[in-house]
Length: 341
Ligand SMILES: Cc1cc2nc3c(=O)[nH]c(=O)nc-3n(C[C@H](O)[C@H](O)[C@H](O)COP(=O)(O)OP(=O)(O)OC[C@H]3O[C@@H](n4cnc5c(N)ncnc54)[C@H](O)[C@@H]3O)c2cc1C
Ligand code: FES
Image (cartoon, rainbow, N blue to C red; front, side, top):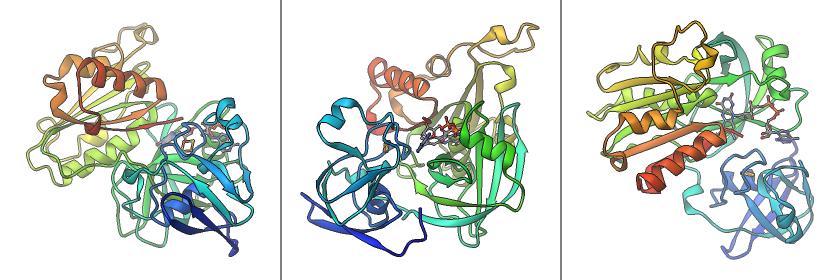
């Protein structure tokens, strides 16, 4: 993100398209702003989906050690679109993915921090206000530029798009995390941050007749709450089963938000589960134990006949994908997910 007016012209070989990239923007995000089918997932240097080849020109890496680019990729001259800033006009090549063409054009807006509400011992809902419509699809995420933090951090919206310009984000406080320290220790009401978004493909689909399943772990609750709110706003008779996994009882939250939705308990059903009952030595927890995807498999019948939304730590999402696709033959087109790297 930059205020710079200077732009670089990027030509994409193979799709006969060119776009302008502001000098401070990245190869990936400028392509998405221009409506190009640039493949991506995390936007944070970790998944490797946004790899491209530089055929002509000069590009700098914002994070040379980004885990999304393996040594083998580097030897082949590959780069990460989400971590590359052009230093000159350039020619690039990537594997186009039409599903990545944004349905909402991402843009950078200035926002004012207005509130922080605790949800658990290490999770809080942050609220930001901008001067313009908060235009995103339920389930999407935005990138925050935080003072004193290198690189942007991705956070999913938990509210619904709105003309008032309110962005609610449910954020986990990671011990030792640079973004966590900025958000939980330094950010004061009235401070300004920049929000770049929306991004992400795990948005709520309205063109399906299948019952909905949300499976979340930890901070993965945020986009699922947004999806549940969107579903409640126009239910159409479909059910939504909301599985939420934490390690111990003190990690569990979400019921109080879902309970306020019309249809809770009937069309919308909440299933919390903890994976480490040893964190509950006094036996306060009366609910099920195990991994959240296992609880979903236990509770649901006809697994291949649902639309799935998944969010949370990469091992949780990967285990859920494996269970759904390999063990229960759920078509991949019915599963929408974000791994929270
Ligand atoms: C699509 C997506 C959605 C997410 N949604 C949420 C959410 O709703 N709530 C939530 O709590 N968390 C969410 N996360 C995780 C969040 O973005 C952070 O990874 C997490 O908060 C830890 O950040 P940290 O700065 O505290 O930790 P750190 O360890 O400092 O940073 C962790 C992450 O920041 C990025 N990063 C680190 N260093 C650099 C660098 N030098 N340059 C560029 N990037 C760098 C990497 O992605 C890394 O995984 C999401 C992640 C993704 C990918
Ligand atoms: S989108 Fe660039 S590494 Fe994930």
